Image 1: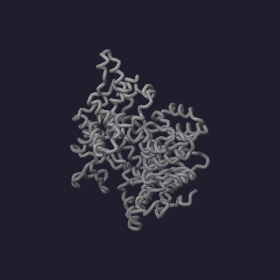
Image 2: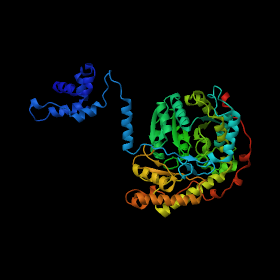
Image 3: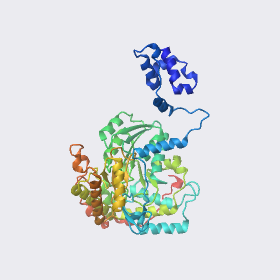
Image 4: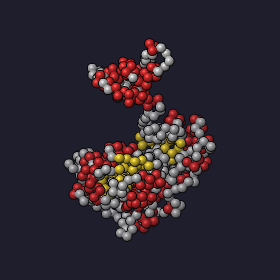
Length: 547
């Protein structure tokens, strides 16, 4: 063993560059040499049948170079920052996960059109998260203009120092009323909201355990990491797996189930009611991200949680029923965005008074950042008002979605991942092909639909993500269907029939799949909403005084 250790020490580039104190204990090598690529090879060479004089180990040049790449540089050397970054970017380009940004300038008075470098050449946008086209709504634009003219373009400070104003209070009141929660808090984005809320609660609650769906958004994953608390991952929408995890945890241990209502890249919908039931059974808090459902589900656009008690909320309007608690009211924390269906920018969290006051008092991502511009908050408030009063917007969006799913799947055999939501994930399954498909749609057909690659989705599941809006006509849909059909033919991308015997066809859209919106719901009009939805009663939710 001494001979092996001495030979290995002479050959190992790591030990050569570091202190001899590292090699003082032979026991360390005896216990661990099998894990080291250098010592493993030294041992192999010393146990061959060749003469002892020839049983010396010589590290191959390429092996030595590979190991030295990860060497600690000498103190006299400066780390090669540029080379390191260049190498990382080369790898991203090589595996086709490098991100290319398209210059897309959406035109306010001509939704869903945009122009690129040349303002005279228009393209149709089919991948926007402006789900209800409200960023272009004249009422929203007018409100933003009015507030800019009176209050300027910036808030001027944090909420604690000069940045707290009536626009925050009006907006937070609208959000709380929409979700039928006691309080709400606005953040600079929903990424920040998810990150800072989860990081804060995870650090504050003693021995907190986070139980997270495996497909949760990066913002939630980041918040969980930043909390440094124990995390458990359950299989996507798998209630049996979730309950098995909950069973292993003491009932008196703080725990929170973290999930989304609509998962943005596959369009799947979570079993919210079942999750809330399990949470109550095992003493867990619930954290629901409604980002991709806001404005689109429920009689007033509060999301999937509202949609689950559709008839009850339709009957009550924005009032809470003191004798019945809906699943939306059972959820401890609901987060959402102002930057998708509401057409502005920003994020929020809604919950009980004590929960919102706690986050307001302890979350760094809220405390130490500049307040959103007054015009943005006023525009978002106006958009929420329009959303809750116009069920017709949601219904039209669903009709366009259903029409497009049927056309693509049934008539053109285009593979789309099956879901009950408004998202159409057109399956490609190859990063390079996905980019080529997106490029061809843009250059040949003047249609912009972004390719979705790793790390947003897993490798081998690359796709185009199509998002219909009420601003898309059926004529727009027909043009898109023809274009996608042409791209699939030209690039020889597999159709739905090609997956027969290779993949489970039940995973793909048939054109007649389950939908959250029933035929009866789609017959409703704005006249079916309660009078209290239309009441123009603006109120403060003054979080400056706590709760």
